[in-house]
Amino acid sequence: GENVEQHPSTLSVQEGDSAVIKCTYSDSASNYFPWYKQELGKGPQLIIDIRSNVGEKKDQRIAVTLNKTAKHFSLHITETQPEDSAVYFCAASTTGTASKLTFGTGTRLQVTL
Amino acid sequence: NAGVTQTPKFRVLKTGQSMTLLCAQDMNHEYMYWYRQDPGMGLRLIHYSVGEGTTAKGEVPDGYNVSRLKKQNFLLGLESAAPSQTSVYFCASSPRGPDTQYFGPGTRLTVL
Image (cartoon, rainbow over all chains, first blue to last red; front, top):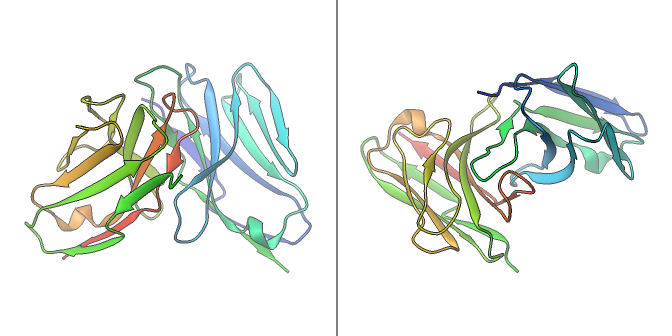
């Protein structure tokens, strides 16, 4: 089955700096890669996703890049703000009715003033 | 829309007791999922459903049962709770499989 590794487990940045979280996956058939943000005491929320036919996707201060050859994808947050502090999870799956997401172990991002 | 709701929010059980967690969604989604979240282990899939009346096993199904009698509800049952089932449980729903899953607020379960 799929295995997703995520690094780092914790990340502290100063407000205004950039943050990068990296994930690798094992199943070459995976073609859908979402990122979820989980605030304290809440359920995860989808913030951005990318499919294997795209190398990069941006949404305001958030971007995701995908390298299918290396089986590697990353989340980039620019101009970080205190409200970006949360736990971020990457995931991977194939697509289809029986497909399931495999999650990474999470990165706790702390944005300091 | 309330989205995905979970009942209860917190529960403490003794070893061997049983309970049912309820997940409800008002978005008319076909797919529903139950995950557990443990420190340092991310989210792991317990069971899922691709439509009313269907269920399937996920990554960690042992000790749990599920039912999807109505499209909007997905129930997770623990027949004989064990301390290893202490966790935070999340339900999610989606219109099209793994894409765009909407998560509930979670249920924190402690088994003594």
